[in-house]
Image (cartoon, rainbow, N blue to C red; front, side, top):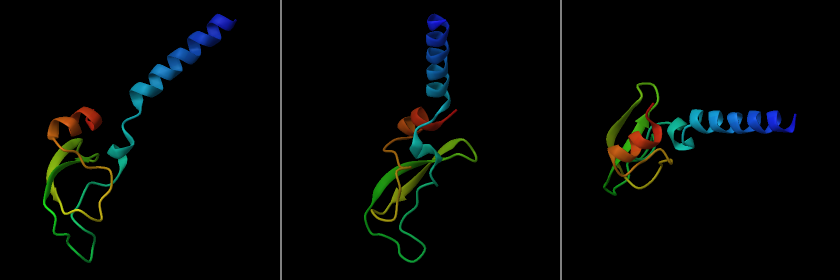
Length: 82
């Protein structure tokens, strides 16, 4: 009985680990500033769009962003793409 419980727990762990994406991937796509201002920094970045399952280029201005921002397309796809 203990063995069966352990096997079930291990299987559940691996299924959940495989199914859950990085938390950054479910945040809204990156943008420069907010609705009122645009920020003046220039940081080429990539952001993930869950609706289309793709990573797109954008320029992050240094404020008003979230964690859905990656330094390269490859890193974005590695973390988020199905």
